[in-house]
Amino acid sequence: MLARFAARPTRTCIATACILYALAPSAATAQPEEPIGRYVVDVRGSVAPFGQNEDLAAPLGLDPFATPSLGLGFETGAHAYVFRWAGITFGVGASLHHSRGSRGPELLSSEGPTLRTSFTAVSPQISFNFGGRDGWSYLSGGLGTSRLSLRSSDDLDTPPQRRANTLNYGGGARWFVRERFAFSLDLRFYAISPLPPLDDHPRSPRMTLMVVNVGASFR
Image (cartoon, rainbow, N blue to C red; front, side, top):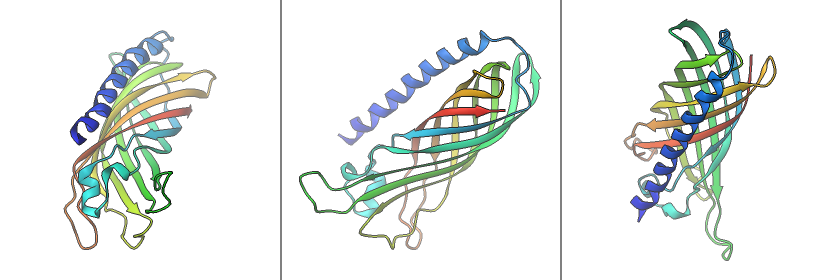
């Protein structure tokens, strides 16, 4: 059952990615091919489908179906564009993401703790950008770190999980509706390395989380 439950978000991720990459380049290439510019800053809200992972909940003695399945948060980042070659603009940058979700006891019962999941990631990125100054799409990725913690309100003495090496990859688009302001969309995947148990820290499985970011870009 858990395998089938986990497969649904995976299929949704793939379908969403295909739609995003099909639409974003067409919007970007319709713009004049004036160079993108030197830098951009992103400020976006985030939706993170955490899912309900048995390998993450079991070391804490928690029911995976009682854990938060959705998190809300933010993502901010900055990117510099260093050179252009054959219609592709190459960029370097980094982003910071934080999201969290909580789930209390069922409505018909007042018993049981509130479970909280939080996810924080610092993600250096190299980007490949397609389009012009007024709008472009991109693919990007890099190796950073993240921390995914699941805690119960009855066990606040348990320390947050350690940081793990995390590969991030994804893409999106920016559409400038004014000279310095753009609508921005990003779909990002975080491939989190497993962590063995250490002292008071439980083990953490290998996981891939998807995050959808929507907001604004500035230059």
